[in-house]
Image (cartoon, rainbow, N blue to C red):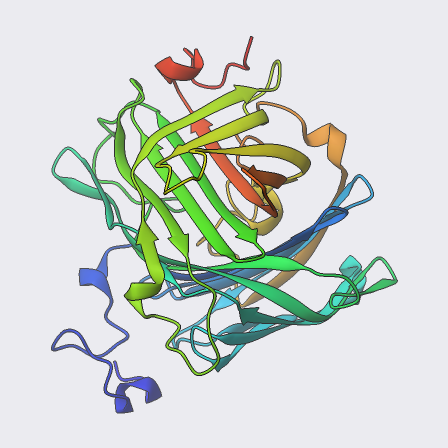
Length: 367
């Protein structure tokens, strides 16, 4: 099947673009953005699932103790970055993107423009198997930036450039478990995942840390790198602006009874005269269900029909549980790196045992 995009010189296989990743049902191509300051968080996701004919998107916010979301899902036989009231326009690839949401019935409207402030980092390819089957095979590019424009939450309009609003752009694609994943036999994998992801903005640049670890705390994928500010006219994908550091890992103190951080420390290689610790203090928490991740109804890639738009509103405290739908979180964090002061997010998804943090069950809370 041909797409209009097949006229572009972007092919990587002798097949039309519509035929993705050997037809694997869990193939996906996703945009993820977040924005944050001390009193506000918003997350934006839009995913295309070419072998399911589905496109879905969500916008979620946390402000004044309330988490609010709009979800949109529809059918797609193209690579459109619009579904229902949510759209993403790539103004300049890897540099400027504009997100529009017009969901008055769900209390969310806005026109938000993300502008990159650092180069993008390509994280190590993340590949895992379930016996002989591909379980996960993902490439992700992460970039720090700032937001302008406006966001309206339940009738209150916020000017994003009235005070600094920082954020992250995450572009990932490949194969990862989706809702209603089709598997030919029961999984051989025990339920275990330990994932931290921490893009951090400082005045003079950025720092990005991520790790996937097994039940013993051994990392099978890790990123630790300082990111240069993006100079005018410079390439946003210039790898010389990414400075990889070694890392001895992290220390996470989980909140009692939960699987989200009360405090975290990143242990990074100390450059000349710099301390090797970045301290992270959580300021507010977004449950990633608000952008479709592990949502009980609007999980990513699930077919709902030609077009469905829905929303939900929660008191943020009522989502403080170890339910599978609520344990995946991003926290806005104040970051301290020696004399540097910054802001960023700490994403956490912790399922199953993890010896270094003392977790033993599938969804037990911290002692």
